[in-house]
Length: 209
Ligand code: C5P
Image (cartoon, rainbow, N blue to C red; front, side):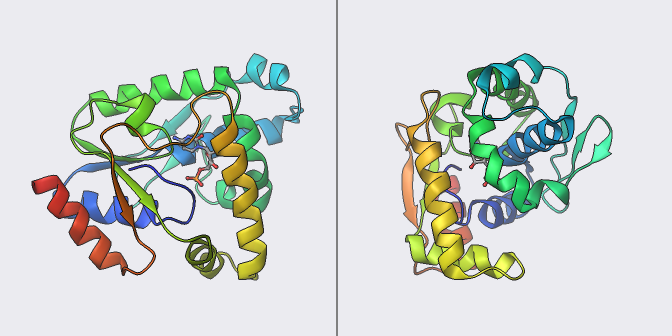
């Protein structure tokens, strides 16, 4: 399940995994966990060489339970801190570093290889697992995406979210390594006018087809 932020990936992926009795992996959380650790360590995130030199150090462990996706860095539970604005503002720069991607994609492939799973991200169908049985690319209008995200983040406005998302989308889709793009063979699903239950129902239909 690929797509930009606010397209509904997390809720849809978790709901579909639950309905299908499958595991679930949030790959964005892994990039966020790496970013959280870099910030803790005081690594200069404007220097890709510095990020590359340190990205092999943290032990990043992702849970796969759709009801409570856990993420730990060196044994510390970071599920809360990785959603803070400092991490959200810095993650695209860290995710653009090829060495970071190589390390996290290898970890993701290990988890995926262990058995059937719903995986959400930006490059799952194109890079991480091109042989996925079903590839879905979720989209929604920029306004709908910002509305959803601002409902999740206390004290934020739709306008501020739309601006922050546009910045992150540009960085994610123009980076040199594995940019956000629709994978070959992916089915595009526009969620703008659909409820969460309607999107999940459509995903289940595509899986069973
Ligand atoms: O999905 P989420 O918004 O949590 O992802 C955070 C960031 O992680 C994205 O903006 C993107 O820079 C990066 N990411 C990525 N590849 C993935 C998942 C996330 O580059 N498969």
